[in-house]
Length: 216
Image (cartoon, helix red, strand yellow):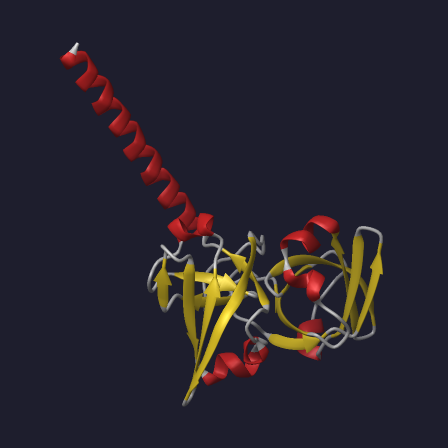
C-alpha cells in the first residue's frame, strides 16, 4: 500500500527495452535506500513495481507488457523524471489517502494555466471513470494524492490545482498539453458508488415488476 505522498522525483538512470519487458533503474537517495530489499514494492509514477536488483545505490525494476500498456512508464526515456514513493509501513502517517498502486489507465493533459503560486492542470478522462470522480474528492495522478478542483462529467474533464510544494517534489511542474499521467481511482469511492448503483437498480427493478403485476 501507498499513501500518495511522493517522496522524491528522480530521473531514469538507465532504460533497457526487451521483448515484452522494460527494465528501469534509478540512483536512489540514502533515504529511499534505507531498509530496501529485493522484492519490495515501490511506486513509480504511482505504479506498484517490484525491486528486482540493488547494486549500490542503483535500484532496478521490470515493467511487463501489460504494465507498459496501461501506464505512462512506456513513455519514459533515460533522464525522464519519475515520482517515487516507498510502500507504507504499519504506523506510518497517511498524509494523502490509501492507494494500491494499481493503475486504471492514463489521463491526458489538456491545458496548463499558471498563476502566482499556483498551477492548474486540466485533464481529459476516460468517461468510464467519471462516476467515481467528484468535486473536492480525491484520486491519484502519477502517484500523488490530489484533490479534484473541477469536474465536468459531460465533457469527461477534470482539473487539479497544485501548490508550490507539490510542484517542487513531483514531476507536475514539467507537464505540458499532450502529456499522459497515470490514474488510480479511490477504491473506497468505487465500492460505494458501485454498491449504491446496484441497490438502486435492484429497487427500480422491483418497482417495475410490481407495477407490471398491478397493471396486469
